[in-house]
Image 1 (cartoon, helix red, strand yellow):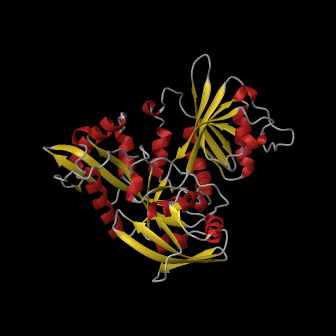
Image 2 (cartoon, one colour):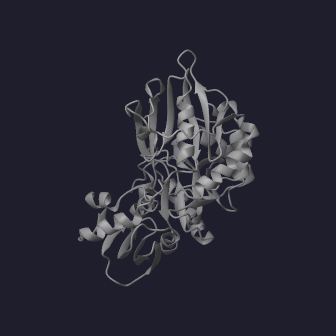
Image 3 (cartoon, rainbow, N blue to C red):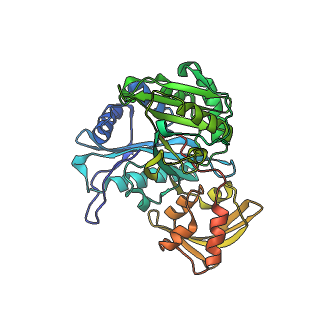
Length: 408
């Protein structure tokens, strides 16, 4: 996650980012707690630190205090069609409230992306605590997250809705391997799915009091093709808050929803999910499923455009020359993108651009959650040929809804 401030033209950078050392981490924890209002458990910090490559964490120091920090995690992300790419996962970005408007954010991200480029990551990604910051650094929101509040008492499944069964009630700590196996199958086919190392599984299953948000310890449902982790909240009017729902198949998704909606003493279910979640279509009346929030989740930046575009599959044939502007890195480039039979060839070209867009728009299109025509309507994708825009829509669409594997 990331937090920072607007950078003003009159700001001058007087402090220089450097690599973090072991001695910096206690101060980094303090800055993180100040910025986000949450104290990270030392065991949890160790799990995340195991994913930071050498030279992957930066700090800015002033008078012995850490006043800025940013890092990247070594990650792997699934793209449409099941391809997998190494990803630099930007995290722990913070600037002290005592040091705003000095250009620290830009200085740190410039240095961090120089290191990411040297390391050869074709894609970088992040989850943003504030939505107005990262577009200017070339990141586009590549998944859509919806918050639902489901009035469980009013839920009635359609008579013709499937009832696959197969769900068991299990103790979470005893089934880590089962969860990991199902998660790996799910993320193998889900754009935005992230490889989850064992250290992060152990961190999740530790189920510390400070991570419960006032709720119960973790409860779990297990299906041969999925699982669901949740907490119970409240006293007299109890409700369920879903921590994680993973379904490899449609039957698993339906079976988990039926089990969750069968918890008679719970008044409602709160969940963060994606627009393709099937629950509303299974009900005689979809109104008990109320959307309480809708927004971004995973933000993506394409550092190596040919490698990234060739890694994913496509829904329709296409041949187009893209003119891509990356103001953050000072690049303006043209690329021919040729798609045939679902696979792409992409390379730099001297041909005239048929479509103009900024690299953040390309990142937003990358996992298939957004349409080129929507950006064209907002003049963020510029093209004089409506047929080309239509072909872009068809090509970049994904049959599987993009989802963030887990927050980082």
